[in-house]
Length: 227
Image (cartoon, rainbow, N blue to C red):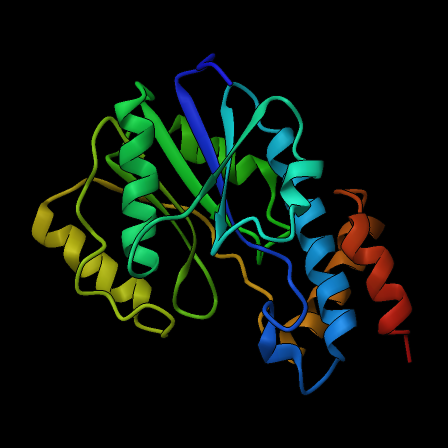
């Protein structure tokens, strides 16, 4: 894939392998259903980034593409790469730095745990004139990070996988004196309560005419019937 835009949107995802994804749902769903659910997350997340205007699209998979899911799923306008680094922060740093080295002016990373994320939030991040954009999530982390022009070092000294991620990142930004734009709060789906909320939210979004429930919504109707 050749560079066609100034903006790069990167979807971070895990290779969909049985027993290796969304393990915090294992007390609520069997492994096969969890795998089907995560594959739906991926389909909806890929569909989401395809709707973003004026951006080249990338998918960073971890730990590898062993399942070959992405080989058969990505369209020609998407580039697949394997995430490299010792932890999540290191992996994001490398992914953003690689895009800047390729000549992109803005790089935005989102995860695959927020398949209902509005496309407008991604486009707002791409249009920001700030050094860095963060989309805070309800669990104390962030669902989106974007940088403009150069890498801002915010990834060291962060307790990844905890509720301190956003706070520690903002503290680092203050020390770096970087200009920050904060997007509206959104949510990840990690545990059974998140999943139940997610189903209700998807139904409300569809009823309000604000979007479609997608592949995830169809599966949730089967595995989480309404009371």
